[in-house]
Length: 139
Image (cartoon, rainbow, N blue to C red; front, side):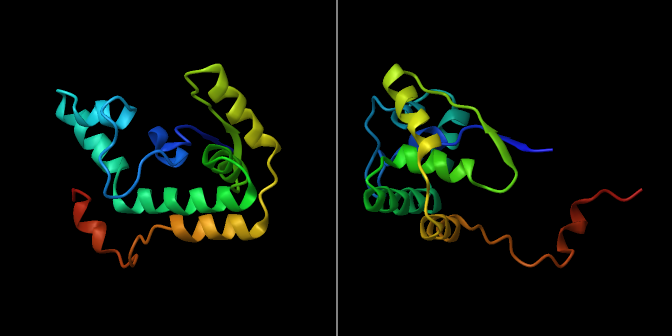
C-alpha cells in the first residue's frame, strides 16, 4: 500500500512566491483567499501562511538555488522521494506549470538536500504520554 500525495505545493507556498513578513499579492491564490468573504477561506490561507510553512519554503528556495532548479521542482522531487509515496497528483493551471512539474520527476535530489528539507519540515508532536485520552468519550 502506498501514499498518493496531493496539494504538494501547499497552495503555492512551496513555490517560493510567499515570503515571511510580506503580504501576498491580492491577485495571488493566497491573496484572494485572505480577502475572501468566507471566513473558512481566510483561516485556511492563514494556516498555510504560518511561520513554519514559510520557513520550509525559504529553505526550499535555498536548496533549489544550490541545485540550479526551481522551488517547485525541488518540492515535487522531495515529496516523490519520501518513503511510501507511490504517486503525486499534480494541479497545474497552465501548460508551463505542467512542464515545470514534470521536470521534477527527473531531478535527482542529493541526500544532503533531502536531509535539509526533512529537518526543516519536521513537526514536533510533543510527548506521547497518553494525555490525549481525556478526549475519548467513556461509555
